[in-house]
Image 1 (cartoon, rainbow, N blue to C red):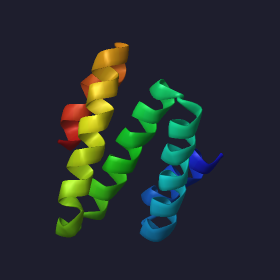
Image 2 (image 1 turned 30 degrees about the vertical axis):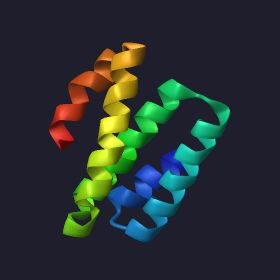
Image 3 (image 1 turned 120 degrees about the vertical axis):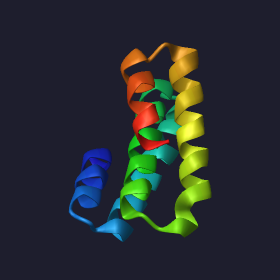
Image 4 (image 1 turned 60 degrees about the vertical axis):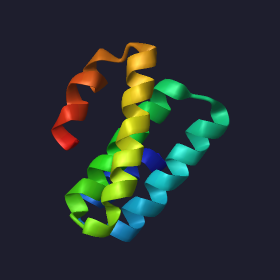
Length: 88
């Protein structure tokens, strides 16, 4: 639920709420070692930061997307691999 609400908050421009919910989601997936879901959540988090458009978030966005890309490559998540270039 938290993940979907984070994506929705980002779509509505509620950046602080989106940040909190997506950070909670990625932390949970890390703890669970749910690597495919972690890769997808990292992508969504990076996409939200990119949409927000703050120059101060560029490095963090790159870190999140690099981790998502590495997991997508390692796990063979082809759909995610195709989506990643759109936010690099």
